[in-house]
Length: 442
Image (cartoon, helix red, strand yellow):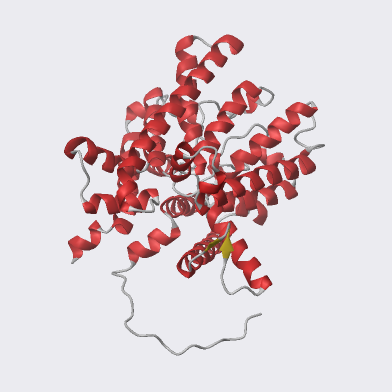
């Protein structure tokens, strides 16, 4: 029974990520991983490994100065594994060795990729590999060429920076080999636009990319999941950009010309939903802009991708539920399709569990530091939603505070539902139903 329990997909996925974090911590504690003569504290290595595997991007030390080239390669490999999905990688190995998938392996891959059926898991895994490699190599080439011809970087350095940032962007990791993230390119669309494209593609989710590949121009044939994801992405992008422009036009965006202001606002609207790169100082943003970031970070990107948060589909599904209730409709309808009650309960559970985790973590973090509440909320949401943006307090938090963020990043990556299921001994359906009752609501 115990052995069977550990093979359950909902338990294997968290364990796989935990194993990757442990391995990454051990590698980052090696003397060859850090620059200079000083060593690396185990908490620093653990925080960095967790942030990398969970594709978050929060850091307690400066990545380019604290970590050696070997250490940066370790970090890059870790967030590549985290974004690609540990179980997706295991499924790929099974495909290469055996040429086919056993049912157990299919179930594990389905849990990681959120695939809707066992039969399409092999195709989905192949798509993950092709899309990941194709987008990352294309973006790496674009960035390397831009860095070499426009900024005078030697080809070797340009190729390294381009590869690191392409992998970081597509996996929504937010790590950078520059101490100021991408602020030096705040007015350069030839750098920011390709990076934004990779972030969006990685955040849409592989099932959506698979469907777009099959039916690129047939809206009517798209699934409800794809329609909701694309609609939510468009709404959050345009709404986030408009709000950032409104509140930051005469603040952090004041030094820029109008086209550069629009570019920077668009970039932050995309990055705030999970990527973690920044082109202006987040700590200098207006309080209203930070509040906008709360919403964007908490919602996040698409399911089964590299994005974090509660996911766009979860948020919009609850919107459809509310709209159905307001209209007095018996069923929840989205794009002429009825949404099952199980899906509605799952969406509600994800949101409530997420809000509960954020509330507990914020109170815990407030008890160990004197930082303002709004700044702590920003840090907590950023960690839980695996975004990686920070107002600059991450490195100054006490060890207990950093430990809280480590737990948040892990829980946010493997998912609140997955964690809850993994902790349960077993699930079962009752063979009977209790009488119905209707408590007063509101």
